[in-house]
Image 1 (cartoon, rainbow, N blue to C red):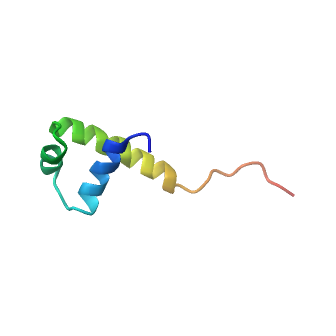
Image 2: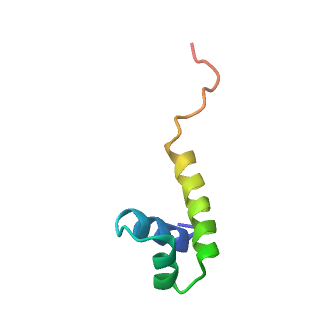
Length: 59
């Protein structure tokens, strides 16, 4: 993965049930960094889960 810290934020948030402040403590970063990583990871996940765009029709 290109963003291992963002992946860790997702892991701690969903599977660990930690708050942003708790995640910041575990990772040794600030709350704002956790929030930025969460926005990055959430956007990446949304793009990956979105159905593919319709391409040219094939007959």
